[in-house]
Image 1 (cartoon, one colour):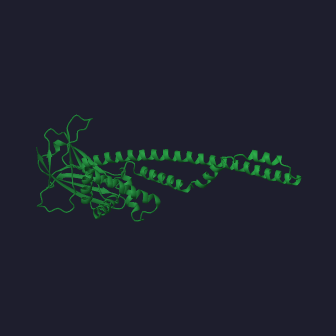
Image 2 (image 1 turned 180 degrees about the horizontal axis):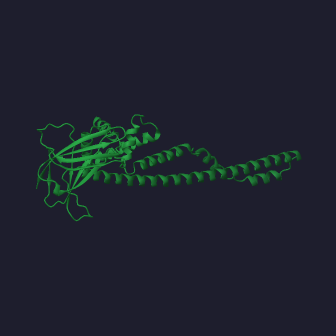
Image 3 (image 1 turned 90 degrees about the horizontal axis):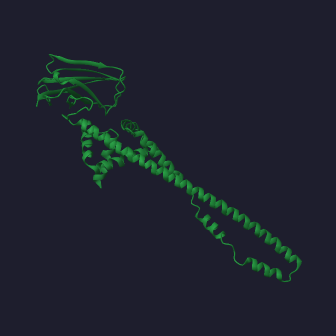
Length: 326
């Protein structure tokens, strides 16, 4: 039980972006291979969305959840589904089930037996005129009462039929939204699987539109580096024509441009320098991909400097790697 509570707290922190980058990556790799953990992640996500829709999520956590929903292909669609489900449930709870009224209506459906015979026998007896007149008045009132009860019964039956039709429509709507939720979860699995493949270093990527082989290098940032520390080693396939340099973006800012410089680690030769301001906003969780000809890379050590530009700040990161042949 304590383990499940700890897992839930960690999954909640993951979805709200409260874990460190290393913890985020480790947890993502774990739920890719653990279906039970992935299912618990979906349950925690559904609970957070439910709290968000009901206004029960703490104000400090709302921006983090909104940031996570922005990254999902159908994140805000899941919020709409949750809001619709809550409205359907609230509507069903607001409808009183007229059990007592249905019991009364059922009792009125049975006509008293033998009343005509009793009334005929009563008329056959000699009675005073005033008694007969009084009886006729009472009988008329009883008939009016029976007619009114019959009318009320028809209204109750009509209301019951309308309620049943409304419940059937609500049930179909819930089934449709549940089907959309399942489709959204399947798309989320596909998106997470795609991100996992992008995180794998040295994973060859074959473009269907390009006949020449292409390889991918996933680079990790090094803010402070000991000059004596060895660089990350990447392999260069002799048959490769193109190299894709993949850099994950982390941080809460939305970046609108970047500058990049690629040179040998000793700084003697600049291979490539470029800038791209005024691009669509780059957010945390996305990747920046640079494509360079494979012939530019010899077996040597390199340094790639990336500067991300936003309205609030400018962030610079260095990426060190050493190219080795197959």
